Image (cartoon, helix red, strand yellow):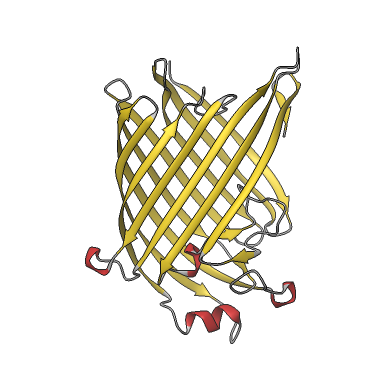
Length: 274
């Protein structure tokens, strides 16, 4: 049967101040064989912070024909005053400033299972980027003097993925890997011309302690951008998903590589720690 998980949340961090929002996931197990376990799902997230940051993200996954076909869709609205320290590894914390972009993105990919755990497909990405505000004569303002401040974004790409994990939402064993290449040319209507490569690799290992089964998770990320991309599209270190120990967007450049690991363990009933 279809199932829904919904909950509100409240949080605080140095780069967002206090924030609040809600999330909901509607999912239904669709297909399972000796190689894959797939669920149709729709995930909705919305939050707002006292720094006037707003994010709305909606992600859908649909499988059919014994999970041999997969459609993935993502719709994002983002109005997010963003920390900026300059470009590169040698930026100074004292140069910190804030610029405010607005970003809309709509991404779709159609993927075909080619063998066991492997999928391959094509993707289409469209959106709009606009600079709302930046510090006069600051680092971001200097950057935008030589780069476009707003415009339509359109791209096409290829996606290769491998997924042997035992669960779509909370894997405890197996591995996942994804390679995405996207090209945003002028002839597709994009006002920005750039290409992007993204690699995400993860593996999960159970620690079989009796009555205390926990999981080790490892992740490797690589992201590279070449060309005239919007500033908000340049990869960063420091966010809610990767390298959380750094202030949000502390380092920004055309290329990023990062590795992290986490230990997930049970505490009591439905509660766990990481």
